[in-house]
Image 1: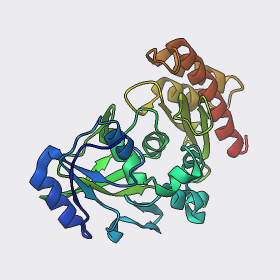
Image 2: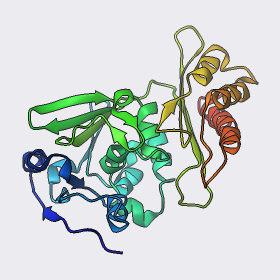
Image 3: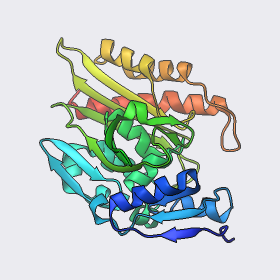
Length: 288
């Protein structure tokens, strides 16, 4: 299959890329790793008049920890994050989640920012960034702005980015001391998109309880917090039945749709099982 005709630009500066997007409005698309956009082009599901290739913009490719905050350039390859020792020490849930993305060949080309800006409803990275309370940095014609993860993911393959904005950097805050984590995913085959994935972060609370973050993907328009599960884990997270109760609450609150990959009832069962399993792993990593 071949893509429809398009103009092509390959800038080396962020400002030039933003100017190209602004000049062409919604008719231009940025090209990052190309692991999603190129198939869409070849199937003619996307028909941009121009592609703005970001691969020569070195300023968008970096990984650094500054003041306890992980800073990831949007064009950083997923494989680079997966192999980074500092990420594995400080944000191990991110390392594990990336290992579930497709296959090594895909991760060698796919970018962190590309996955987040696409916001596929079954993708791993949007869910983990929501769980980690990440901050997205975007640049447009009028300057830069910060977008919290809970405001960034707007719907199925939709984000808060304007057509003339680029996602330039992701900032992930340090995890509280003693945080336990769990990431569980079910897919039809290794490397497939998740049918359901569950991210759980548990931290010691000030009153002897727990602070909990539970995020699910694969059940709707994008990543979503399971607040009913969070409340159960926060209130009785040390209890023997808390993990199963959290899973049951997450499943009861979820509203997946039937599709060719799995019926809704099956996804709900996965929500219950994976949320409970990820919660147990998080408790184990806290030493419980």
